[in-house]
Image 1 (cartoon, rainbow, N blue to C red):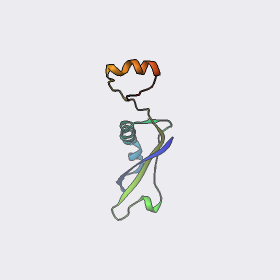
Image 2: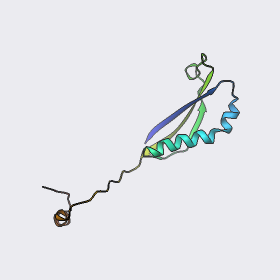
Image 3: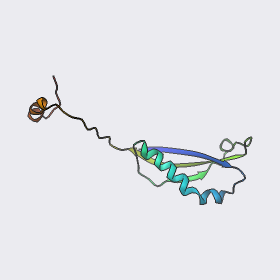
Image 4: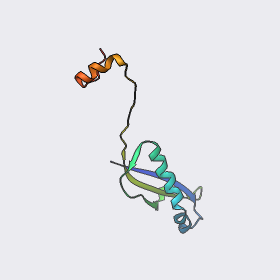
Length: 99
């Protein structure tokens, strides 16, 4: 299980409540991006404004927000064709042995 974070910025003059009201869109983008990369969500998605001085870039007048949750890798299924001549040996041994 991994704690995966996503970040986004908005102009600092945008009220926090307006950002929260639009949070469903940000959360959807966050979740879709990890889902497409083969991750499975295992916890509630949490978000918040980063209030530390490192979180706000005063020069550019932007506020930084974070979204995070616990994820785990989905199993990867590989499908491939086996030449018919190997099937009897595969059934006999239960192992993929092509030598």
